[in-house]
Length: 208
Image (spheres, rainbow, N blue to C red):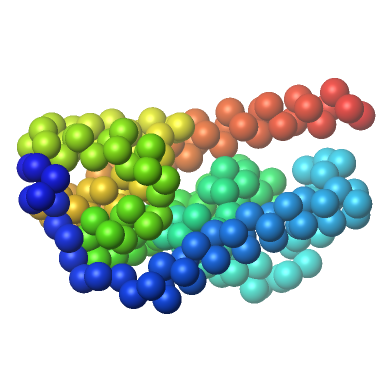
């Protein structure tokens, strides 16, 4: 598949592009503000302190958290690492990763679908040029992209949200895409969250 064969899709309006960029900037600012506020409240002193405070949302907590995971998967409003680790610290390793899994799977399917509809322009608007050009060449390798995509979905530090959009530019079926992420995402989440929580727990213990 050459660059000219990549699905162009429907053009995004300038307003939609501005809104997506604004959402990304607003999300980054909100993340910084939240971290400062949480630090001042002492929520970062321990896992228990953060979990106890955040669970005050009651029954609304899980659906709101899952919705947040869906949004950050489709539009990079908040760093995915932050929300995934937050889910584990708030709800525990197993339940937290279940909520992470549900949100990320739904968000990934939405991202794939949007790329299938809006094509290259949408994908380019969601990522910086260097990342886009680093991976776009895989679309020239035919079926090898499917194997590459499967491997990267199981690799904890891959740009998986972007790659889900990139897959939407190919002829990969919805069935195959969903099957790959359903199987691979638990591997990624387990490795990712176990590794990062171990590092954070060590840092918390070090400063106690």
